[in-house]
Image 1 (cartoon, rainbow, N blue to C red):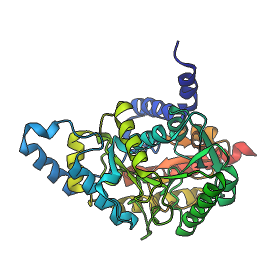
Image 2: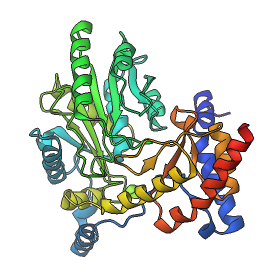
Image 3: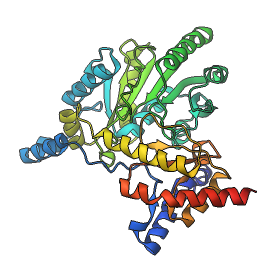
Image 4: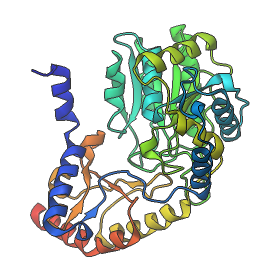
Length: 395
């Protein structure tokens, strides 16, 4: 018999899996070209030209050390490239020694929680939230503490402050946000940092701020994502190239530690050890070499921005309420009926969405607009009919 915890996880993680399985069934029955699949955040915009060029160059070198083991923190030249990237994005000088290459952002978060959490330590994060956060925290004996956001999905700083208690070890935020597309403004980051400084003094220990930033460079309408490092020294940034270079399957990311982090050397040593003993044993060698050459490249964000505008116009026309995404490639509309039932009604129109309860927010659905514009346009009448059916059902 499988472990009770994993059995529980299978039940809790079932919504995205269910949508994936339902999508496969619908595509097999009606043809993939007829199904409007908004269920998975799998980027479809091609990687920028720099990626293909760098990959060809790497493969043409054909030398034995190309695929060799490396130090547990990553190749020194790759760490240097990531440090330059973080310095530019955060506006705080970061050295190569303060960066660790990881197996994507997921690997980065897991090594952070392995390094920081004792059994029973709590990690507070805003809700709705990326579905895996609770699992990552519990992987390492921690206790997840989701805290509701405001109706527009902005941070409720008062609620976050109240949620910090004697067992709180870290606050985890994600901006641009999955599943809502919100970007937390500078004043919210500054306010959260003030709270963490005050609470750290009151508790007489360090509270860590972890910023999960795989969508940092997918911001719309000229917006800029505020720097965490400028506001709070006990902070760690997790980055990934899954979205900004469209390389999700290459599993390449990094963790950057603030240069003024309390007990920084111990934290870095713990992260590097966790990177090895969790079984990741470093991010892939070829991927490290690749992103070291492409760290400043970026996919064409205007493609996602156009898709956002098109999908939002369709949702608005259908009569759904939503907060307009400011970044990432998700929108999180409210549903006029139960979110699971609304997803079922959408499936009758060959439209796939994920119930919001999978992200800690029943009464919403997540729609991923990393699909071509023809697919988005094809969903227009289906959304209208679904809303009409839902409203009729609710009367």
